[in-house]
Image (tube, rainbow, N blue to C red):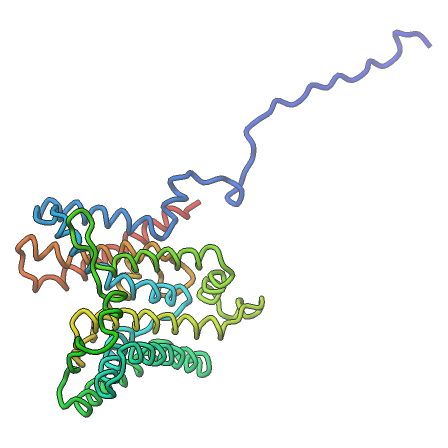
Length: 358
């Protein structure tokens, strides 16, 4: 056979590299969209807008003392909004949170005064009562399967009636007696209702507690197994139970966290004003829920953060004081809050859909 008759070896050329094929599951989304998908980003931008608006509309807010007042108002809402937000992430909400604050304060005030004991006895008993109310709400919820709306609405009505009836029965009045001269009052006031000076501006201790609780709640949600449980039971209770999440424990402890928040805010009110009106607290639960919703938490559960409600509470405090410092009619406060709530929900919904769109 001649050489010319042999077949020439095939020459292969490497293919020209083209664009890498990706699909919606593997494509990396832009950083901006990933940030917008965070539940707290939308409310942060809203809080900045409200802050700038009132700085312009109410120049008095630029004073350090005025801003300290805004932070104080925000902290009293924000401390309760944090456990309410965790509960909402877990798929539930508590309509009794507002009157539970007053129940806690009334318990501590009346017990200390009527039994003439150190106020710390009343404080500890009030903590036990608040935790028990939260545990009861959670236990009834998981045992009966009733919606949290019905369970906590019933608790709201019971506590509201008990607050008024027991206070009148024990004190003969609609408010508790003054406990400012009782043993342990000064120490308790230092913990729950004191102030400290920062550059000549008096700042309430609740602002510090608010930020500490927010940092702790954020750590729990993002860095602990319990935080995973909260998101799991809020997303799908049955799926969470199927993979071993202790649903009953998680739900009950979330309600108990709301009880703890009610106790803390109740102690602040008691030691700030030395006495408590038994009819207060009605309607505050809606403020706490609204702050959490504005902060990016969904009523359907499984989504939210602890940082978002911090900004939501700040917006409430800013609007509350901003209207006063701007010289506007305070009767418009609730209307303004309603518009802000609806606007925040719509913006959060739009941003979240835009951020997750493929």
